[in-house]
Length: 295
Ligand SMILES: [Zn+2]
Image (cartoon, rainbow, N blue to C red; front, side, top):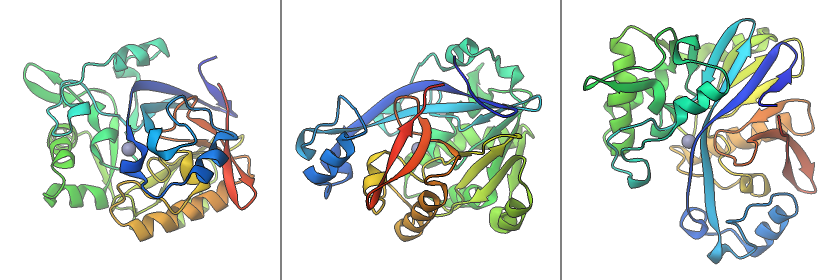
């Protein structure tokens, strides 16, 4: 099986690549006790119970969500052939489109692309290189971007890699007339009225306009949380943030999401967890654990 089935929905994962950094570089105050607790339920060959010898590995993948005849791609990874100032994702050449094809989809089958936020590792496959130009990879898709992120990344200069991605993976989509730039400020009311279909909810913090993608089709709900939670370790230590633009807001959003979906039937789809990348948050003493679910 390649798909999770939830009522009228099917969800599959399109793998791109994995990468990581030494744990102390990312989360310097993680303790051996935290890691021992994580090791109770999370088996990762790159993570030991010693912080100094552990790597924090992240998966890069998209999800393909099928509902009511629509094929929706959630997040778009790094992309191929992109010039990036971050070496691990510079000029990639991964079989991402082949992995999409293995799930049964051609690029022209995608009806919508929803980016949880406009960081470089979530927008790359929005475009592909064709005759020296960046063109939309998914020619029949509308691409949904939040106005808050769009406006921010169109002017910010501090983090070059996001600017590079904005220029080659966001702007060409806008110029091709394929983008829908949505103001998320008033989306909370909409969220509460809709209990079926696919909808967005603001989750500002990791980036100025990042959002959750919710979906439900007559069965259990699903949430695609983007980078609100990067790694299972943050269920032991929700106080830890990873490259959050507004760390305080991001932490609040993370804790609220965890409290809301823990011990519920909401299936969670993580943008960066390894293994199946999908499962359920469960209470575990004074913290949480993730029950991974295979499709
Ligand atoms: Zn990310």
